Image (cartoon, rainbow, N blue to C red):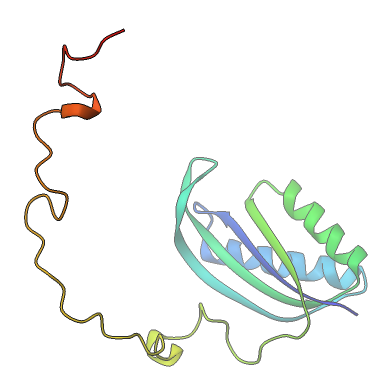
Length: 151
């Protein structure tokens, strides 16, 4: 059977147990349709980059599944209809990664960001940088210079 990874975001006003109950609910839906959840993770309440349905935060959950496409489609359909679920993302993968996801790892365990070259000496940037004097309010580029523009 194909392997999938699912992430869904539920409303912030749910309790932790209700959010984890949603994970169990959708795990049961996959099982009823011939699939199985290999692993699940509750990532907790996180702040989102933008509001979704007037919510700034949401409960994030992650599922790794081994299920037929029909079971995944049914689970997604029910997730989208569920009032408490705000967003759903499903990705088909070749194999599941071993161990906890990157969200569950401590920052110390994630490793370095790689070799980043030294940027060397940088000139001190004063007021205006290397752009020179631009004059008042626009000069020859229009703006608020006023009066020198002809029609």
